[in-house]
Image (cartoon, rainbow, N blue to C red; front, top):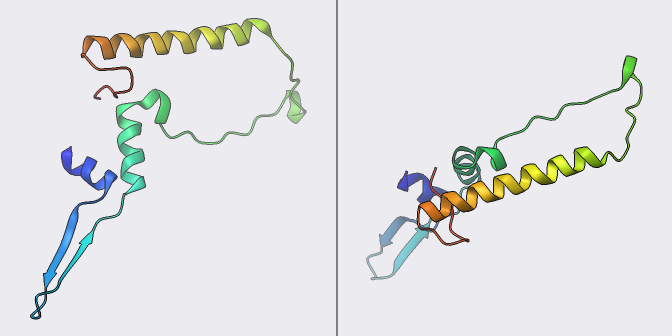
Amino acid sequence: MSAAFADAIGGTLIREVTRPDGTRERAWAPPNGRVAHELLARMYPEEWRPVKAVELSGHQGGAIEVGHNTAVVEGIVKRIAEVKQRRHAQNNAQGLSAGEPAAG
């Protein structure tokens, strides 16, 4: 796990050469965004899992009617609040501050 974090963050010394004249050349690994995204997707699947695009259409391939449904909006707001509350409770149980990510 620590190797995956190190790869995601980058900055690991990957090569060090000392030349005969005494000069040194060092190279560090760049951050690996693909590994970082994979770690986030596994640790926080609700927020980071890969989502495939889906095209939707209405009845018999027609347009979809779009409107403002207060009950739907309120339901979404309620679900978001529940997730935030659950995450806050998990962090408190693990003794983490508000900004620290909870493990897996």
